[in-house]
Amino acid sequence: MWQSNHNLAALIGSRICHDLISPIGAICNGLELLSLAGKPISPEMALISESVENANARIRFLRVAFGLASPEQSIGPSEVHSILSDISVGNRVQFHWAPEGECPRCQVREVFLALQCFESAMPQGGTVTVTSAGDSCWEISGPADPNRPDPQLWQALCDPVLQAQIAPAQVQFALLPTLLTERGRRIAIETGDSGMVMRF
Image (cartoon, rainbow, N blue to C red; front, side):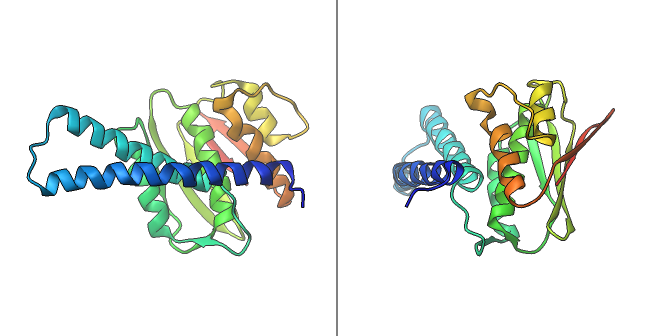
């Protein structure tokens, strides 16, 4: 059976993340065994350990953002906090997740894509806050610059009919409005001196 384009992309994303998790996990286990054996931690080993942890955190994030999410799947706040906390280590952008209960994984996927949009527009860093207003309504706010990386990308988020040039690093700007349109939602964006607020 043929899949829709974005479902096929999600299957590919899930497969890539699944295949990468195993070797990265093996490296983590190897480093842990060296530590338990009493081997001194050299600067080189510390760098490898930090890089592996960063890669593992990023893959966990990407698995939610770009992987397949069925309507009946949910994700708890502890897992979301863990993912966002891990990718914030050493990162200029920090994340504050306010919702306390479990959320549909497909909606968390949309929020994670929105977080990537914000991250690309925050060269100076800062904190992005996620709140839920109930009725599956989400609000993401932070000191994002609407002129970065390209104003047309933000305009196309609010009006999917508009076209914008998409680079590989900006694929979240194309996927997010597609997913929301299928759910009957539209994005509204407000900008001000303190940054940007996105609602959907």
